[in-house]
Structure formats: structure tokens, C-alpha cells
Amino acid sequence: MPAEVDVVGVEYRGRLGHPSSYGLLMARATDSPGVRLDLNLMPVALSVPCDEVTLGPTEPEYAEALHAAGRDLATGLVITAVGEGLYGSSVVVFTRLVAVISLLMATGLESADEVDIWAHWDSAWPEPRRNA
Image (cartoon, rainbow, N blue to C red):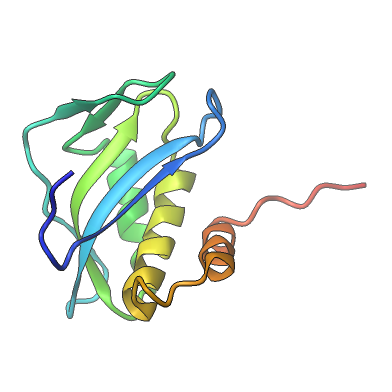
């Protein structure tokens, strides 16, 4: 998918059929705090197995999650594209994608470490503890 030079995109594809198995975000950094949406108003269907994914305007609950996830960011984000699955997207996925994109912008794509990326993913929405 074409993007401007300063835009970073992250697509997550998890276990098929899981309610938190898909999300795509593209964003650029901004000096303004928080998250601002600057989305294309023409929805486009994407080919993703076992889901109906649309690129375009986001569901209100996902927009709220994006804004909430951006409240504590050191550098703000302008979200330029959102890909959401009818079955596989969730507030959890989009909250975690904001965390990963903000890390990539802060550290630079070349220096991003896979362990750090997954640690940011996990810490953005910690899994509930299970009693043994």
C-alpha cells in the first residue's frame, strides 16, 4: 500500500478466528500531543483470509481506543489509515498497534528490536493473570 515518506505502517495478523486477530494502522509523527485521525473517506476492501477487512473510516469504538492509547505518548500521532476486520479487530488490537507505531517512530525502524516491539505490544494491553 503506497504511503508518504514519513508514514509508518503496521499490520497485525493473529490466529485466524480469534476476536483480536487483525488490525492495520498507518501514522506519522506530529508535535501535537495525542492522536489525531486524518483518514481517507473512501472505504476499500482488503483481502485477508477469514475476515472482511475495510480500509477507511473507523468504527467509533476503535477511534475512541486510538485516542485513549495516544494520551500518554511523548510524540503525537496522525493516523492516516486504519484497516479493520469485521470479525478480527478489537479495541485491544488498535491499542497495541498505537504502542508499536509510537515505539517505531521513537527508536527508528532500523534500530527497532523484535523483543522490544513485542514487549510494547504486550504491555499496552496486559493479559489478565490466570490463577493456577
